[in-house]
Length: 169
Image 1 (cartoon, rainbow, N blue to C red):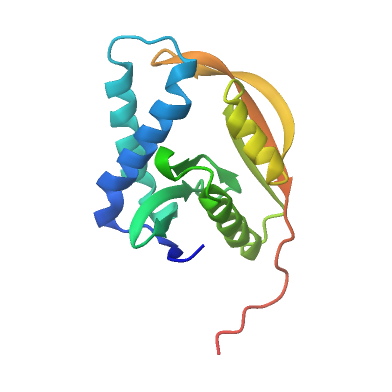
Image 2 (image 1 turned 45 degrees about the horizontal axis):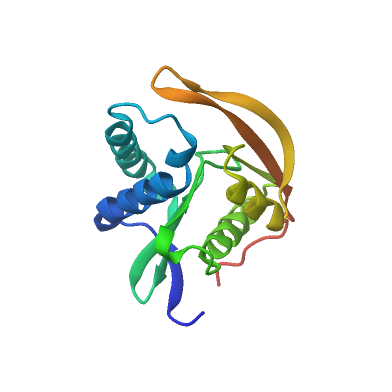
């Protein structure tokens, strides 16, 4: 796809990345939940905090110089907690590109497997991850007092870790 690039997130991205995450959540996850007063505002605030706290572990996909999605990884673990693509940019291969790039970064660090999870009722997301080579490991109930409990699908993909030396020359 012409005009597409992937880069590290920068501080100036934070409001836009939080907006992408919120709109993707509102489009894909919110319809699966029981609407409660304040839920949308709480999630919008939480996602803003997530972006702020994990900015150094986020990669961004741009289309025509504008951020269209992002993916983050956990610190010191081969786990991908967040992958969001703006609803109007979904089904264009951007999520696949982000996921492949994050997997490549993890492979370079020696990871043999990568893990992630998504709500079980989010069938399009589960299918997306399966098409990317992920296998379902387990179903478990997630949620806490601040969020409605739901079933979560835990997935894994085997990687091909890099085992050589990276030459600095």
